[in-house]
Image (cartoon, rainbow, N blue to C red; front, top):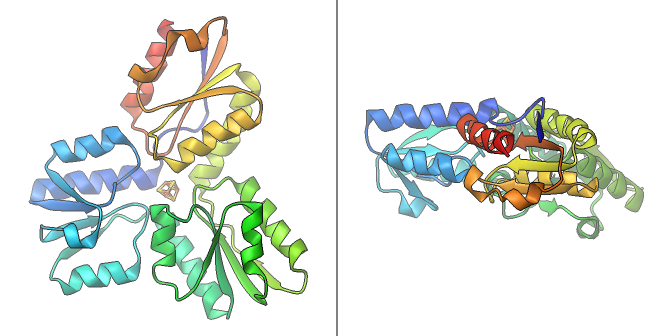
Length: 276
Ligand code: SF4
């Protein structure tokens, strides 16, 4: 079986930098990571092995030093932690910060902020956390929530498929022709590169394997994309989840990975596929 590799896959610079910062900080003393540093179970386990405690809410933070994740955090959470006397380290990716700034600009223009993304995703919660009001949309039906708004400012969660985002913006404009709609494309470049590489990989492969944790939004999107193009696609967090019967009669398998997947996990999966 031939294994084709996607041209862009695996960790983006935002995730890599956040992990490096976390490891550096754990060497300096006790540290709590607020939330999952990245949505990959192996990376989370490595952080725990390095001695970093984890908290899911600010109330649970026990150490003086606290690290905020690459997904970005609402300003009010940072201020609260600083008020409690904590040393706050922020690993927010600069491309997530760009989304926060885009929202500030759109709100300053008197627009109602609209985020295309998953309402309960940590990045989106970081974005909405500082806004007085906002609307999160993901599906066509969600567009109805914008009825009656005259000025709208739309951004996207960084890992949303650009096609979906553009289709929703187009739908908003058609559904509310009287509204003044501004759109800032905030899907990050590493996500765009991976989506484009995925398009090419799907054309060249019979079956697709996506390496990514079950909570990784961009891994899930890559898997959904392959399936939407009629390919059988499997998402696995590590090589031990692969099943030989998935590849019976398959001559070309395409391999890609989400932006939070470490190199060694991808290599492990590649080696397993090549050996079968
Ligand atoms: Fe930054 Fe994009 Fe990576 Fe998120 S997926 S950490 S926004 S580069």
